[in-house]
Amino acid sequence: MENTNQKNGNPRRDFLGKLAAGAAAVGMATLPNPAKAMSLTETAFKYADDPELWLARIKGKHKIVFDVTAPHEIFPFAWPKVFLMTNGAAAKDCTAVVILRHSAIPYALGNDIWAKYKFGEMFKMNDPKTNAPSVRNPFWQPKPGDYSAPGLGNVDIGINQLMDDGVLFCACDVALTVFSAMAAGSMNMSAGDVKKEWLAGVLPGIQVVPSGVWAVGRTQEHGCSYCFVGE
Image (cartoon, rainbow, N blue to C red; front, top):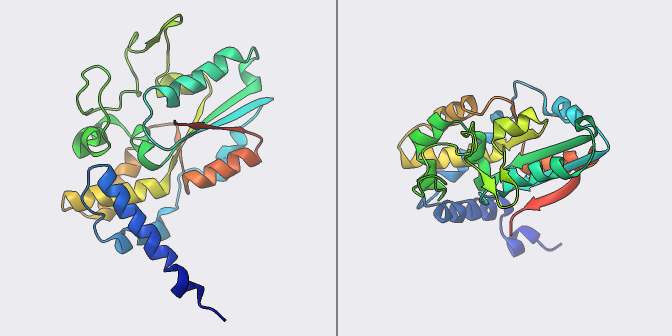
C-alpha cells in the first residue's frame, strides 16, 4: 500500500508552515516554536459559556452569518447593520451573527490589549480617525458620528451598538491561540500567559468558540445563510 504521508508530506507540519507564512504576512518574522504554540489548543477549549448553548440564540425567520476572516474596512460591521435595516421585519424575526476569525481576531478584544500588543502594527490596521496604526479597537464604543455613509448619514455600527440591536458575535479560539503565541514570541513572553490575558480581554458579549470554521458550520446548521465579508 502506498504511503500517502510520504507522498503528500506531513499535514500537521504543512499547516504549521502555513501559519508561519501567515505570521510574516502580518509583520512577524516567524511563528515562535509553532509546535508548542499549537499544543495550547489541547487545553484551550474551555469556555465560561457553552458555545452550543450560545447557538440557541439564533432565532427568527431571517438568519444570516457574516464570516470575517480579515480586517475589511467598515464592512464587517456595516453589513450586519444593513441586513437589519433592510429586512422590513421585527427584530425578533431577524438574527445576524458575526464570526471574527483569522486576522480579524483583534476586533474581539478590548482597547487595553490593542495598546499593549500594538495590534495596529501587528495586523496592519489603521485608526480611521488618525490613519496611523491603531492603538484601540475602533469599533468598540465609538463616539456619535464616528461613522457615516453617503445618503444614510451617521450609522451606528459599533460592536456594542450592534449587540444592542441583537447581533451575535463570536471569536475563534484557534486564532486567539495562534496569534497570542506569535505576539508572545516577539515580546519574549509566555505564550500561555498571553493567551490567558487575551481571553480575559475578550469584549463582553462576544462568545469564544472552538474555531471560526466550527462557527461557520454550526450557524448554517441552525439555519443561517452565509455571507463572506471580503473581496
